[in-house]
Amino acid sequence: MPRPRILVTRAIFPEVAQRLSEYFDVESNTDDAPWNREELLRRLHGKNGALTFGLERIDADLLTQCPTLMVCANMTVGYNNFDLTAMTAAGVLGTNAPDVLTETTADFGFALLMATARRVTESEHFLRAGQWKHWHFEMFSGAEVHGSTLGIIGMGRIGQAIARRAAFGFGMPVIYHNRSRLDAALEADCRARYVGKDELLKTADHVLLVVPYSAASHHTIGAPELALMKPTATLINIARGGIVDDVALAAALRANRIAAAGLDVFEGEPTVHPDLLACSNVVLTPHIASATAGTRRAMAMLAVDNLIGYLVHGKAVTPLNAAELAK
Ligand code: DGY
Image 1: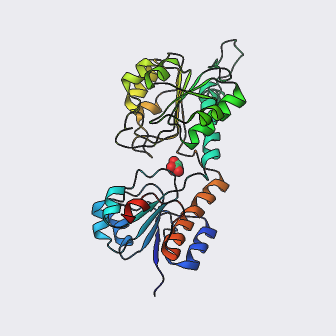
Image 2: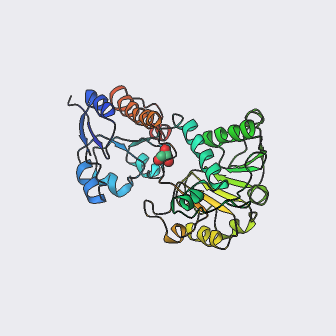
């Protein structure tokens, strides 16, 4: 029986590549060149598995052209690059990398909240530009974090980890909105209170988004939602581009309709809408919420465990459509 053939679509840690090569024949993208669709299809042809990075669209068209493919393992928790229905129809398993990034990503959500509320990057740019000539009592006065109300939209594992930081570390009342309400024990554990989306938007001093991207969550925050928020409020997005209507947000920031925003994800990233780049009251980071060496290594290793689990032992660790495939 020949060894399964695996494609790794971007550069990865050497020890991760080494572990893969113990089990599989591996083709890697060591140059880390972002392949276009044609190149991806060409290289994926004849492979049995792929280690993917949440960027490669795995859809019916690709699956028809790659009939030997059996599994795609994202090293990300988000999997909106997978058309899971098409994957199930083609008999292909999708896996993601949950849990190992939860606390690190929650740390970053909080860092972005703090930086946004307290105008950390804006004031640093001012200082670096040599504009700091004297102290002024209102200079870069920001929004209070401790004791203010945090509204979390999307109360999965990362949302819950952020709620704990806010409630226990910063004495913040936490309200949340989610597709389904948490059970009472979990709500108590996070000290979070369930509210409707409109109430959250009207009440929160800081609105933080950690909802997964889907057609249903597209533009969860657009002009109507921004209009409900307090003019002193901040908006933090560590979820996915497309959850926020970036053009509407830039207009709201320009008009001081809300005070500030902190964004780690963007519609059409890595391109960032020029209207956002032109706003000073927004903190912008390049999709780095889970980026610590330890966490990124753990995410990659989990993806490898999924490939080995499925292709060698017949069972992935964190499958997304195993139940559907078994039907
Ligand atoms: C994830 O894991 O989904 C993060 O957004 C990193 O891409």
